[in-house]
Structure formats: structure tokens, C-alpha cells
Length: 190
Image (tube, rainbow, N blue to C red):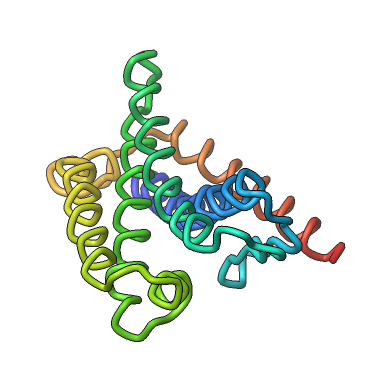
């Protein structure tokens, strides 16, 4: 039974982290778009698509494009910090999520700069020097790996031999189910 719980936890929490990372990243674009006088015309947050936020007019495109990865890294780290300070059980889950967001955003911007794709391409087109994109990746990816350091046993890896919190596994599965149902139902209304 312990391997089942491990599979449920890992199998539900990884996609939940991916969807959460996309949502927080897009929240940064949305907030910056509104704060700089732009109009958010479209937000794509479909589970089977790459997320995006369209802002038109966009008076400060460089601010809007950088806000996605910056907010996408800072907010999860702040959430993790709040969970630690409140002594909420299962803080390792928010720690993993914060690490996931740091690695995903850092790789997206740092590696994306080589092909000029997505946000990295927009950053370069609007005047960000390529070394700034590389530096973002160089700083955030190691922070993500530091967040993940020694989390393996919480996910049943290493000496824990598959033992995980059954409660965490089924809370994660429930959250993923709710998020997917919301995402699919809201996306079909476009």
C-alpha cells in the first residue's frame, strides 16, 4: 500500500506543481499589465497548452514580460516562508513547489534566450541584454535545487523506501482533480 501512496503523491503533485507554476507566472503578467495601464485581452491556462497572457495595448511590455517569471519565483518562495512561519504540517510540499517554480522559470528564461522563444524572446526584442536572462537562470535554478535538497524521503525516495504521508497523497490528488475540473470547464467557455 505504501508504494500506491507514493505513486499517488508523485503522480498528482508534479502536474499540480506544473499547473500552479503556470498560474502564478501568468498572474505576474496580468498584475503588471494592469498596473502599467495595459489591458489584458486573453489569458490561456489550459492544462494541455502552454500558458500565455496577451496584453493590448501594452505600454510597458518589458515590465509585463519580466513580471511573469519574477512573480512566478517570488510568490512561491513567500508562500513557503509563510507556511514555515505558521508551522503548517506538510511544509515540504510548498518547499517542493517553490523549488519547482524557481527551476521552471529559470530554465524557461535562461535556456529560452538561446532560441529567443516565449517570454525570453519578448525580453530580448524589448531590450533586455541576453546576459540578464542567463543571470536570472543562473540565480533561480540553484535556488530551486536548494529548495529540493533532502526532500526525497518525503516523497518515498531513498531510505524511506516508498513510505509517504497517505494524507498528503490524497490531498494532492484531490487538489489536482479540482484544478483540472476547473481548468477544463473554464477553458471550454472561450
